[in-house]
Length: 372
Image 1: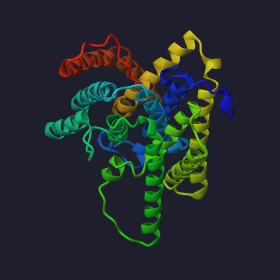
Image 2: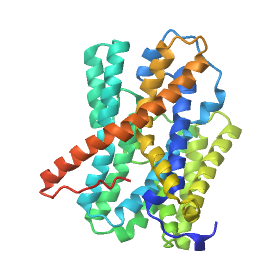
Image 3: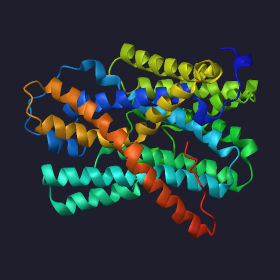
Image 4: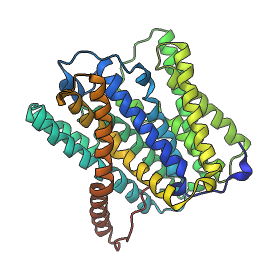
């Protein structure tokens, strides 16, 4: 990796990041539709596909969940880019505008589709819809994917705290802290596992405290420091600690040691692609490629939120004899629905929410939304 080739690009202009982000979303989509729902049904998925014969055809997709860990690294990188020149209010507003309109749209569309086709108890569905709309950390959402939004918001809150304290120039302290924080938590988990100690802790607590995933945001933060040519030997040491913690966290989720090591290496290779995307971004840049990659990047968020509902419904109700064909159609329909949301629906919601927040703060509406 050649540091001298880094040109400190802006986050929105890094073409490779959008392509990686979209690829990660597709991997998660295939994982949920072709593997997860059949192995350990999640939330509404079990109700939607109930009665279908178990499908084992796409075993290669069993590691697609690593795409979520890729999202967290990208978030750490992009949020550092977004926050370095922002005021606390502008940063908070950009995050609210980026997260909530998409969540509201996807939750509402999902709720309507489930209500019409699955016909669950309305009280139960309304509760899941509301918890999805507010991104309620303890869970029981329309689909299980909303847990990652609570994790993202927790990370945004830590960055916002640094901005409020006027300490963004010390943001590397946050990355170091998250590296040590996650590593220590993983060591603690290893201890209670081998000591056979039972600890009952709600699943959302480690998530919102960034105990499990803080190291992934830290890796993204160190990529940002490297892109800005501000990384020091001390930073490198903490970056290595963060990478080790990430690798252990990924490997521990696999059944076998070989599979776990392979999963960690795949994640590390994707992080390497992010670094190459930053270093050699100027060779990829062209107006056409930039527009295409940006469209793919913007479709990632609604694809992540809506794919379980769209995909599960197609698997359940489209009368194709081969379940594999239903899964393929579910993936394609999810991607198409994501583009509809990102190109036409989400921008309207973002503009309306941005103007409402401006009025609330007494600011003049901005002509454009800077949502990384």
